[in-house]
Image (cartoon, rainbow, N blue to C red; front, side, top):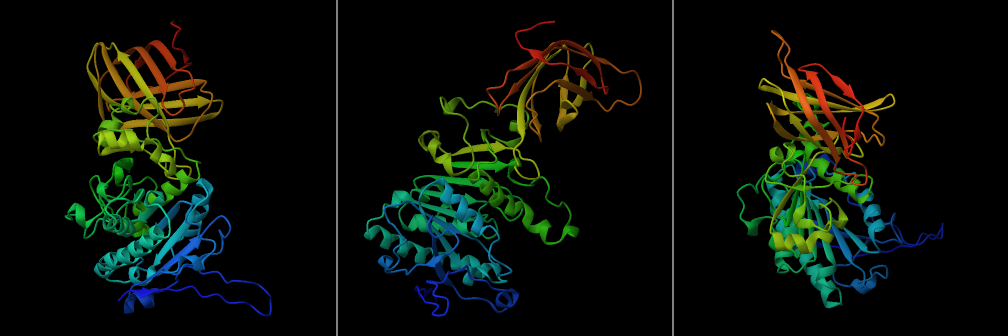
Length: 449
């Protein structure tokens, strides 16, 4: 049964303080063991009450003066809560959304329903919660709000809940953002049974855990795949890490989105058919998006909407570091080799600035180096060194016995992808031995030694 919540105000007669704050429902494991029945609460935040939520009446919107239907409205929808505790990121996303523009921010608190040890029960409740939220948005529309100004942000199971709301409203919602939509129970689902592009005028999706709790495939007008959409750097690789082993990759979607909202990490997605092709340097241009740049994860991705709607479903890939601000610095590296003997190996590149250096290892597969062959690489560095004074290069072939063969580079060129204002760096005619590092000072590409 769905319980409808109402707003209650009280006045502290002793302190003279006004209305109390309405907080996200805080449950514990005992509630999860016993099971919870669905109870949907809608907590309103605006720039006027960022730290003090106001619970909305589902039927009488005029009872809350802070709720301005002329403003855009973003709904934040959490997912499955196996411990019953409030999501640690709720306050962060509320504050960061308020920085984007003046809007109503409504946290959809369905913790009573999502907090069940039986995941199947929580999945069942998504349909009921979607009916609840659909009714509220229809009331908004009746009182003058535009559906095109509504943005649903759903995390995990909440992404599908958002999709059900969008489908109920015939796809007229302005935007749905799905943060690693849940995979279990949805792997074989039809588009009507999960989030899909028809659920809103614009659907953007971020994938971080497709091989576990997240959903494989493409489910939006644009799908961002962080580090290929599966294993995330810095997350535990063994079960001995405890809870983090299970949730780290899945939760990374939220932290990447928060970082993007904070504008501290500009995470550019490159359209490509696969992550391996992206790592091979085959997808480092965004011709279809000119004169604009490649799509960037975050609140402003809707500026590419018209192009994306023309292109159809678009997959974009990017890599991150293990920690904040997550952004890697990317260079396209073009080499022309002239070695006599065919060699296979991996490439290590270091950029130096004074005593500081950062290294890129291009080791996802063996690369082929042969006579007069042009090779394109994607080199991704964890740190941004603004002034590169020296570059060192090593081609590791794994050859530990026999003679070391020489590899001749007729030209090597470094093109900064994330910092197009920076000059290209080149070097010409370098003789190096396999497995031995060679260092050189980069030159402007219009120079020649």
